[in-house]
Image 1 (spheres, rainbow, N blue to C red):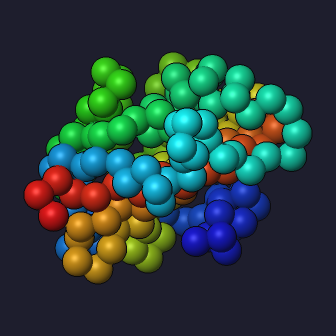
Image 2: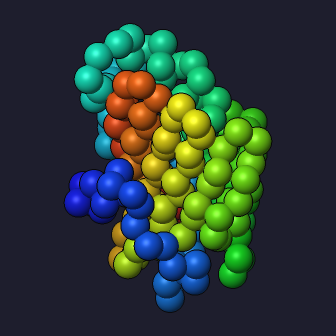
Amino acid sequence: MVLALLLAACGGPSLNSAPPSGFNLQGEWELVRDQSGLGAEGDDYIRMRSGNRRELARGGMARDFPVVRADGMRIEQNQDSMGISYSTGDYRDISWGRRDRGMWQINAGWVDDELYIISEAHDAKGTEVMSLSPDGKILRVFVEIDAGEKVQLERVYRRSGS
């Protein structure tokens, strides 16, 4: 995944707009706290070059990338898009391909078996990479945001009922 993120940083990978066979995120997902970079007090262990990590995690980054602070998600997926309802009350609609959403240009699609959601604005870029375990029970979401300072974090979710 790290190599794939480097490709995204260097002009972006070529994204396939057709979901790979078996990549189904439909359902309820619960955060696995001890695998998601969260300490005992709920503070993120965010790797970044400099700056105030707590302010970044709780400020604009969390607003534009709700997965950063979501303890759970409900995902609906079809052939051309998915909708994500986050436990934070936020909702996000992702269509495969390129779309403009407010200040963001969003490009969503697959590289091999990973879903990329690349969000670009004039002064910021965010890349979310979603990887589904072979049994479909674990979802890993790696997030990298660069808005003058680079932030990276990973969230791990377990499909409810698994």
